[in-house]
Length: 198
Ligand SMILES: [Zn+2]
Image (cartoon, rainbow, N blue to C red; front, side, top):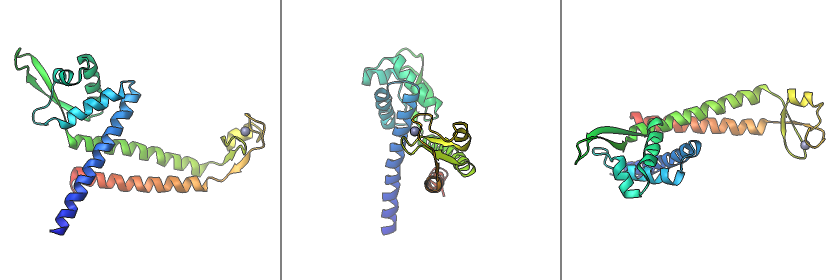
């Protein structure tokens, strides 16, 4: 009994965590696409409240938010391209014209979040390889960092301020990278268990 309760608690907790990650994801998508991020998050919230069995049309979203249908469609397209939102085809209740009813499929959200984390993981890993394989120099005044090749090119003198460059030990940075990589790997494993079932 007690175990069951704990399990439920941690499930709803991870659900909240998922939705927060989804919000952050959408915010970044909107920024990247230069779409209003406030509008995007409002539309996301409506979709999150929408019954996936029914979905919601762009016209209905316009009616709720007051945003123009063309803007609503832009956001829906953004969510669709990131495989966060999807639609089913239906008929307009009055005109009978084809309508698209949008909804969020939490399983595909899970997959999209995993995909995004894996892309970050790859970047961290190649950064780690880069840090391990290179020697770095640093300006003691402005902290600008140079690779050995660049530092050599500048005769070990900072091109910004003329200070002598110093060897930068990157062990601490390497440790941080390693820690972030293992945390992210652990997170991805947990997310995969959630999406695919453990
Ligand atoms: Zn400098």
